[in-house]
Amino acid sequence: MIENNRFYWSILKTRTVTVSVQPRDSVKGVVFAVNKLIDIGDGRQTVFLDHVDAPQGSPRRPGANNELAIPFKMGNLDFVYISRRVPIVRDVSVLISELYKEAKVERIVPEVISPGDLLVFRQGDEEAGIRMVDALRLIYPEQKQSRSGHVL
Image 1 (cartoon, rainbow, N blue to C red):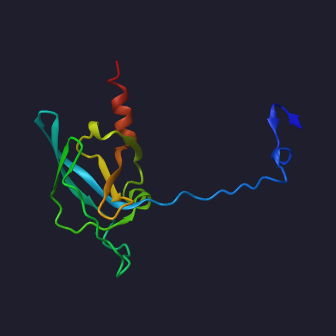
Image 2: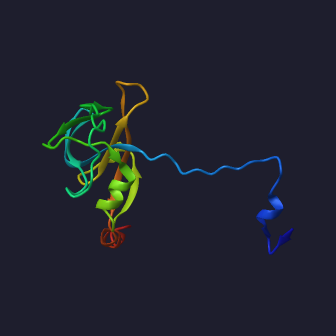
Image 3: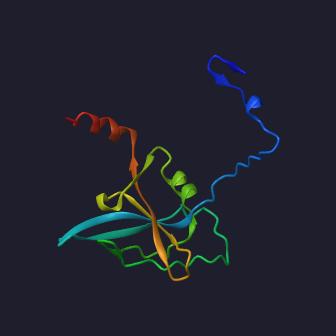
């Protein structure tokens, strides 16, 4: 039955098809903020990373496997870690939503990172492998308005 150019779900149901909807698995990883970026020439960049973690009051599971081997190179990026704290493997989306409530998070390609961006790492499928899941940029509402005036 079509009314006002819309199909009703009850019309589209069939007896032989089962539909299952499940939430996407959460990505557990380590989040680093880009503190400084140095272009050393020859297509390589050195990125200084600082660990991003929840406030001290957040609960941590004792005895959880929180070790993650962090790479020192990836693509054309060399990483230097300046944080003294040990990185903790956490649910990335929950951590970012806790710390940056007023900011909008956008995915970017790693080639255009700048200070203030976030890099997310997680353990790969193989034991020794590590991979960068996302490069994220935080956009605050006041930045968006000020940037719109400079567009040609």
